[in-house]
Length: 374
Image 1 (cartoon, rainbow, N blue to C red):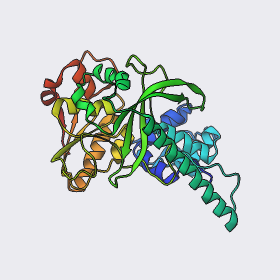
Image 2 (cartoon, rainbow, N blue to C red):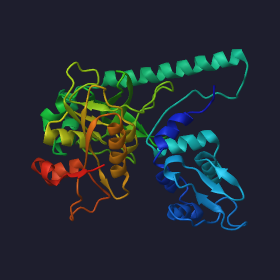
Image 3 (cartoon, rainbow, N blue to C red):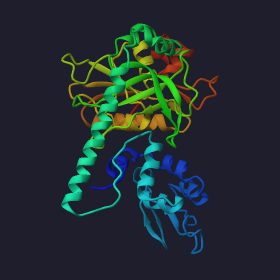
Image 4 (tube, rainbow, N blue to C red):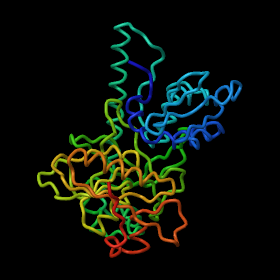
C-alpha cells in the first residue's frame, strides 16, 4: 500500500510516446535538457543537467527517450524520467507523478496516508481508507451526473448554443446519451483554488467492459461560449481502482450495443468527434485528448475504424493517429487515418475537423482529408 495520489504504472503507460513534450513543459528551464532533446538521433552529448558540466559533456538521452524517458550521464549513471525530473525540480516522487499527470490531463485521487507501515492492522486501515475515498469519489461522480439534464431539456440551452456555434445541428448531438448538461459546477485551478461556478457540458467516459470511469467537463458560459478559465476542459477525479486508459465518450452508439455499427470513427475532442458525425453520419468515440486517443480500446465486434486526428504544429495529433492506427491494425482491425490539411489562412496552432466544418463546410470532408498510409 502506498500514499501516492497517482499510480506509477498507469502514468508510465499514458506517458509512453510523450516524454519529449513532458520534459519540455516540466524541465524546459534546463538548457541542458533542451539541448539533449535537440541532440536526439545524433551521437552528440551535452553537459549533465545535474552537475552542469563539471565533469565534461557526459549527458545524453536514450534513442527511445520519447517512449521510455530514459537518459544517462557518464558520471551520475542512468536516470529514469522520474528520478531526473525529481532532481531537476526538487520534487518528491508523489509530486513528480502529480506534475506528469497534469501534463497528460489526468486527475486522480487517493487517500492521504501519513506513513508506511508493515503492520497488518495499519494495512487494513489503509485499505479501508482507500475504499472509503473511492466510495466518495463514485458518489461525487453519480451526484454530478444525476444533477445534470439531457441536452434536449430547456435548462440545457447554453449547451445547445455552444454546439450550434460549432456548426453542429441538434440531430447530431441530442441523441448522444453520454452527453448531458450541468447548470453550475465549481471550477478549481491547479492550486485547488475555487475560481467560480459555471455551466458545463458533461461527457461520461465508458470502457469496453461497460464501466463508467469518469466525467469529462467542458466549462461554458450561460451565453454558450467557453468559460473564461485557464483549462475549460477537464476530467473529474476517479477512483484509484479504475483506469481511464482505454475509455472514451461514445457518441451515437454504446460499447455494449446489441447492434454493432459496421464502421465507427474516433477523434480527440467531443466537438471534433461531433463534427465528423455531422459531416459523415458515423457513430463516434471521443477520447477527450491525444494521450487517451492512443490508448483507446475498441469494442471487439467493431472491425472497420476511421481515426480523425488534429493537425497540430507540434505533431501531437498526427502522432496519436499513427500510433493508434498501428495498434488497431495489429489487433486485426481495418483502419484508415485522416488528418485535415492546414489551409493557408489558418494562423492557429492546431487545425481540426471542427475547424473544417465551421470554415469549409461538411461537403469538403471527403475531398480534403489526407489518408495516412502505414
